[in-house]
Amino acid sequence: MATSAVARETVFALRRQIAKIEGTLPERLAAPAGEGLRAGPGLDAAPEPDADVTIIRRGLAVASPDAFLATGVERLDAALSGGLPKAALSEIHGLETRNAGAVAGFVLSLVSLILRGQPLPVLWIGTSEIFREAGFPYARGLQGMFGIAPEQLLFSEAPKLTDALWVAEEAAKMTALAAIILEIRGSPQRLDLTATRRLHARAQNAGRPVFLLRQAGEAEPTAAPVRLIVSAAPAASRRTIAGSLAGSIGRPAFTVSIGKSRTALPGQFTLEWNPDEHAFEERKPREKRAENSVAVVPASGGRTDPAPAPGTVVAFPAFGSSAAISPTARDQPSRPQRPAHIGPRRAG
Image (tube, rainbow, N blue to C red; front, top):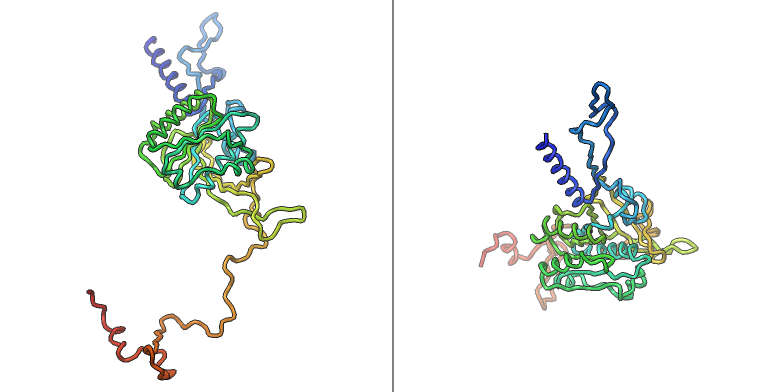
């Protein structure tokens, strides 16, 4: 009996440790009436010592609302069970290099929501390769678009991925930072489950979010409980008092897909960032395309002669020759050129 009790406590301790790593919480429930009870003559019913009344619930449904970073979009927050976890590793994924600007803009929007009411700085970590490819954020754009003061965003350019991971792990332990951003290109082998577990555990201990930006890489297993796939969405027309302004470019828009979450609920959303209110707004399906849109390249017109039919061979007179070519000979190659069209091409 003592051996089984010790084994059971060991299993419970392991479950609690796994729940802590995964960002879940243990919940103790009372045993159902009539189950796990042992009663004897003249004795009241008491819980049976062997009854397992500890249940580990997956998800953060029992966590406090302050544990999440709400995006303000009801459907997205509901699919994420409240929003992005504040004390955890979250993966923001861009499938192609051309989505680097959209991924960075989306993360800066999340940082803008985090920095409301707190003057703490944010550390952005990346390798020299990623900063050469994607560039650095523009200071005036940070202030005007996201309300982030330039002195609140710190950069750490590492020569190699190993150095960037080391800086991220050390920074994730600091409570003097509001958030840490680690930008990685591709699918490097060093960014495995072990590395992401260390980042996730340190983010939980410090109570700070760590955003992992994956640029132009395949989705791989990580310890991040949430993975969002972000790409650029077509911008709608600018809205004025008189209505939509034709031919203009409106607010930045993102297409956000849930690749991984605690609730395992899929979903795709089109979000617009309001730079005046510093908040997200979900675009309705009918607003996917701008009003009064026109073709990028206008259709050709005013041509006198149509293009020849496909497969027609056009012959030209010899240079300097003033002899007129008959209409019947225009569509056929000259006699010296005929063998070149009929015979096979010789190599060399």
